[in-house]
Structure formats: structure tokens, C-alpha cells
Amino acid sequence: MYAHGVALRSSDRSPTLALFFGLLVTMAAVVAYSWYTTRQISGLRELQNDLLDHNRRDSLQLLRIQNDLNSLGLAMRDMVENDEPYPLTAWSAQFQRIRSDLNDALRLEEQFSVAHRTPDQAEYLKNSVAQFWDAVDRTFLLAQQGKENEARAQIRITLQARQATLSTTVARLLVQNNESEELAATRIAQIYNRVQRQVYIFLAAILAAILLTSLYLMRWNRRLFAELGALSEQRSELAQKLIATQESTLRYISRELHDEFGQILTAIGSMLTRAEKHVPEDSALRKELHEVCEIAQSTLEKVRTLSQALHPVMLEEAGLESTLDWYIPVVERQTGVSICYEKSGEPFPVDSNCAVHVYRVLQEALNNVARHSGARESEVRLRFLQDLLELEVEDHGVGFDGSAVKRGIGLTAMRERAELLGGRLDLQRPAQGGTLVRLAVPRQNLDHVK
Ligand SMILES: Nc1ncnc2c1ncn2[C@@H]1O[C@H](COP(=O)(O)OP(=O)(O)OP(=O)(O)O)[C@@H](O)[C@H]1O
Ligand SMILES: [Mg+2]
Image 1 (spheres, helix red, strand yellow):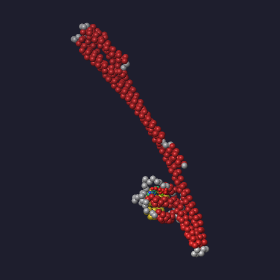
Image 2 (image 1 turned 135 degrees about the horizontal axis):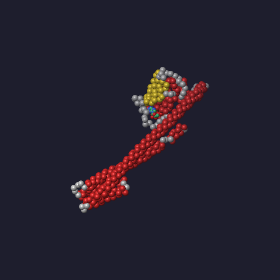
Image 3 (image 1 turned 90 degrees about the horizontal axis):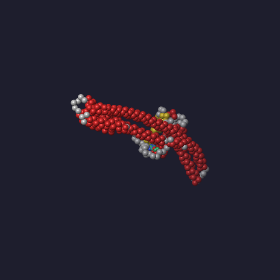
Image 4 (image 1 turned 30 degrees about the vertical axis):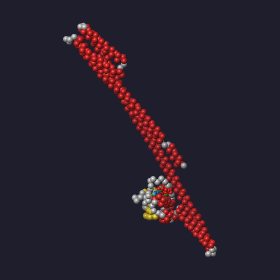
């Protein structure tokens, strides 16, 4: 009952549920972390694509614009200085070329700057450029009309100032681009730092989860093994108590049969023999009395045999060696298995309480040979070694079949008896096949009462 209770308790505490929960939590953490990392990485990609790449392309166009403005500035300076032999209108073609390049650059710049420019800024640039070209057109008109000096004055007063303003605006935009690039780089670095920190935290959490789960499993396993050990000990104790009870009961019944019933039957036999003598020799009664006397005699024989079979009194009276000498021919007769019995070594005394276990092991091993091995021959070896008593029972029958489903208690009882004696029981398969049962008990365990 107790053992059953312990087993139930350990199954109640099965770690499966906790482990399953732990697995779910770990998987959820992995999924959440993957989602988080993917988001961070796509944020990085967005920053790089939308901000950095556009910014660089925008800056390239701004540099192109700046270059055009510089060319215009140089041209205007030459126009104003008036040391060229040709009229102002000669500059018109160069201005047209620069104008179309500038327009192209402005158009491209507008595309790349959408993300990081306010509508006011864009409008301002557009207007300033338009006003500049208006003034240029007006100046060339004056030049065409032959008013070169007026046109030069116009360049000095209006055009150069507007060109300078435009240059400043573009330079400011370039600086702005540079600043937002730096800002983006800082944000990217921050994202990298954050992701790195999260990786460390995540790894630490996963390691902690693995550690905790392993510790939990180890603790649970240790407890389980301790419980198994306790259960096995209890089972062994129970088996040994059962064996002891069985032995004392068998010994008691065997003695009762031998002493009480034996005496009664002996008394009946001798009374019948006496009575027989008082009856005339040829009377029918004398014949019947003789038959009853023979029945009493054979009953006495049977009771003695049964008494010996239950518990050989010989063990106490004549010792282990003589009991085996008597027992082996009995088994041969009963089972039809022929037994080759070998004794070796210098016999030493074995306490009868120990000898009974050796005797029972032999009994069970020979029973198994007869019932399971299919062999018709068997070998029994009893060795009195210097520090050891060895008993071997060998057969060359079918041997142990791993697939045998039915399991009796014979082998278990043999092991428990070996344990009771402080010895060990081994089962082996001899080279020729079959089974070898070996019981080995240290000599010093055999001379005291168990
Ligand atoms: N000498 C042997 N040769 C072949 N098989 C054996 C031999 N001894 C035991 N076995 C196998 O081992 C099993 C267990 O043996 P065990 O003595 O424990 O039980 P049992 O003999 O079947 O029943 P019980 O001994 O309880 O009456 C047997 O059923 C048998 O299959
Ligand atoms: Mg058996």
C-alpha cells in the first residue's frame, strides 16, 4: 500500500506540464524576438534607403546646381568687366546651355528632396531661380536693343546679387543635407546599439531558461531516483520478510508433520502389530489388521517424504552437503532430468538458516531446468572455495528467451535469497547455449544466523 502511494505521488509531480509550459514560453520569446529584430532591421533599411541614399543623390544635384551658379557668376563677371571684343548677346548661348542644365538639375533635385524639405523651402528655391532667369531675360533684351551699358548695370545691380543669394541658398541646403545625414547615421548607430543590447538580453534570458529547466529536470530526476531507490528497498525488505515467514512456516509444518503425525502413525502401526498378534493366524480379521498396518506404514513414509520436501530437517541435522547428496537423486527421480553433480574443495560448516537459502536456490534452478529449458541433462557444481561458497546449475537447453512475456517470481526469489546471504546471483549463457545460474556467497556470511 505504501509503495503504491509513493508511486502515485511521483506521477502526480510529473514535470511534463511544467516543461511543456517552459517550451511554450521559450518559443513565444523566440517568435517575439524575431519579430522585434525584423522590425528593427526593416527600420534600418528604410533609413538607409529613404534618407541616406536620397540625401546623397540630392547633394549631388545641389553640387551640380552650385557648379552652374558658379559658371554663371564667372560669365557675369566677364560681362561686367567689358574687356571682351564681342557684344553681351554673345553670352546668350552659354546662358541657355547653363539654364537647361540647371533646370535639369533642379528637376532631379526636387525628386530626391521630397522627404526632407519643407514646401516653403522648395517654393523659395523655385521662385528665386525663376526671378533670376526673368532678370537674365530682361538683361539680354536690353543688350539686344543695343543698350549695353544699361544691361551691364542691370547685371551688376540685380543679377549678381540674385546669383549670390541663390548660391547661399544652395550652400545652406547642402549643409542641411549634411546635417540630416549625420542625424541618420546617429539614429542608425542607436538602432544597432539597441539591437545589440536586446541580443544580449535575449541570449541571457534563453540561457537562464535553459539553466532553470536543466536544474529543474536534474532535481526532479534526483528525487525520482531517490524514490525509486526507497521503493526498491521496501520491495526487497518485503520480499525478504515473506521469504523468512515462508521458511519458518514451512519449517513449522514440516516439524509438526514429522514429529506429531509421525509419532501418531508410528503408535498406530505398533498398536496394530500388537493387536494382530492376539488374533488367530488364519482369521480374516488378522489379514485386514495387517493391511491397515501396511497402510499406516506407507502413510508414515508419505508424511516423512512430504515433511522432507517442505523443509529438509536434514539441513539442521546433517548439514548442507549431505542434504544436497540426498536431494539430487530425488529430483532426478521426480523430474526425469539426469544430473551430473560435482563437489569440490574442502567442505566447511554452513549454518542451517543460511543453508536453507542455498538449498532453495538449487531447488528453484533445477525446477526451472525441468520446466523451461527442455534439456534432459543438467550439471550441478558445489564449490567450497577458500573464502566463497559457489553453487552452479547449468543446462544446455533453450536458454532465456528475451521475448518471454510471462514472468514468475522464481528468479526474483533467488536474487532476494542471495541478497539475504550477502552474496550474488548471476545468470549467464554458457558458450554451448542454455542457462547457467551461479550463486556465490562469502564464507564469512555462512556461519551466522540470518
Ligand atoms: N533454465 C531455464 N531455461 C530456459 N528458460 C528459463 C530457465 N529458467 C528460467 N527461464 C525463463 O525465465 C522465466 C522466469 O523464471 P521464473 O523462475 O522467475 O518464473 P517461472 O519459473 O515461470 O515461475 P515460478 O518460478 O514463479 O513458478 C521463465 O518463465 C522462463 O521463461
Ligand atoms: Mg521458476
